[in-house]
Picture 1 (cartoon, rainbow, N blue to C red):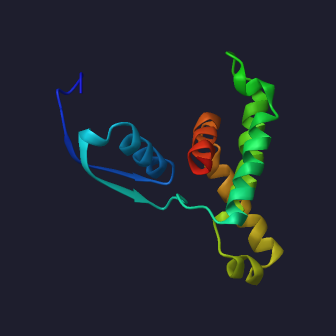
Picture 2: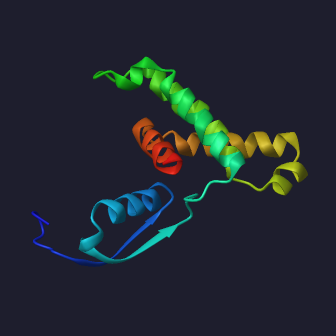
Length: 132
């Protein structure tokens, strides 16, 4: 609003973590937008996914470096661990069941490598957003 002198937007669109941000913006600033479009997020968690993200939350909170002012390399290792878990939600159960171990290893490696560009604090935000 301050930078662009915009009082109201027609729509806010976001995917995945951005989809969670859209929900947050809509909850925090409902009078500033007409519509939201949230794509490919898990805004409604099943019991299984709730436990899954509670586990990710516990992993995140187990590392004291998350609350430090200095970025610690252990946070990068944490991103790798969490991306390995997030891979479970990347493919359906049938796709995983029908893939060979070699195929799963290759897909997992690619997924984790692509996820190295994720920020640990985005993962923390995503987890908090999904759980709340």
